[in-house]
Amino acid sequence: MILVTKPFLPPREEYEQYIKGIWEREWLTNNGPLVNDFELSLKRYLQVKHLLFLSNGTIALQLAIKALELKGEIITTPFSYVATTSSIVWEGCTPVFADIDPQTLTIDPAGIEAAITPNTVAILATHVYGNACNISAIDDIAQRHNLKVIYDAAHGFGTRYKGRSVFEYGDVSTTSFHATKLFHTIEGGAVFTRDAELLKKMAFMRNFGHNGPEAFAELGINGKSCEFHAAMGLVNLRYIEEILKKRKEAAAHYDTYLQYLKAFKPAITPGTDYNYAYYPLVFESEELLLRCIKTLNNNNVFPRRYFYPALSNILPYVSKVSMPVTEDIARRVICLPMYYSLGKEEIDLTMRLILRVQNN
Ligand code: T4K
Image (tube, rainbow, N blue to C red; front, side, top):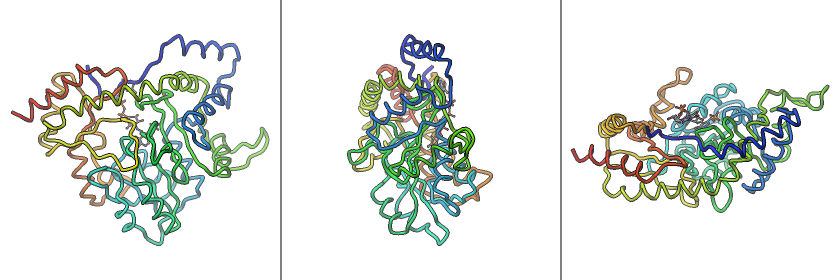
């Protein structure tokens, strides 16, 4: 079976070494040594100013919205995972969708500008599939209209924009270290900010607001991760360059088939060094896409319709609104298998099956 993704699993002995240490110290969670070590190692690897390791990428989004004290409308993309929109609603704000660019599939800055009202307080944009948004244009709009910016960089590990980690942009960037991500801690996530005060606030917030055992600095929640997740992160970090390299090679092999396909690969935003987090293809029609999926599934290949349907059409807690570009793309896009151990033979099989369908 060839699934859309498989988690990277490091050599078991390396993980077990860390587990041995946990047993010796009898320290499992609440800001233990491995969590501290992981945060420092990540900071060093990514060359970012500040970060906090959290229990998942959804809590990262919620914490970012809460810490920025956003109340009102947040302009966001309808082409993302549900957590992007649901976090806005969860925090009592109103999502206002702006359509995406048909080439990069990231939120279109012109759409953002058009969606601004006196109630707009922020922009929440996703670096979808790991492809950076048009950050320069978004930051410029935010400055001119005095809006906060949160980047949902759940797919962004390893992507760089204008020479820096994509996590360094926005008032806050968030990411996910879920098992399906190219770099993972089984479950996990993080917030990134360059603002030391904001970092301090989010650090209190992730730990119930505690400021020492008997005092509270903020309203908080439990957003902590633990030693076992940090251990997985520490081991996986040793393999990150190899992981990124293998994905780049897999994508290059897929690319050799592109010229024969009735489909296109989304464009990478100028200024972006891409991480190959996903391999999306936009077919010329939904009918062709559905036929391809059927044949692939019959041959035990399971691509996924990330992200279908558009978030602007499907959520029972958000008013439906027409987003023509997103709706059109969402109907025609699939993500092909993409993971560390994916072989050329599997890519060949997948692409030959697609070619067979489209040429029939
Ligand atoms: N923002 C964005 C833009 C996001 O994409 C996400 C999450 C978030 C925020 C929130 O971050 P987290 O709170 O999750 O940290 C997955 C993930 O659960 C989710 O993390 C991810 N985005 C979303 C795009 O995809 P599913 O529904 O695709 O997972 P599932 O279980 O169907 O697995 C996908 C494939 O991977 C399957 O073919 C099976 C395989 N698999 C999966 C797991 C978990 C394995 O082989 N082993 C495994 O352990 O949601």
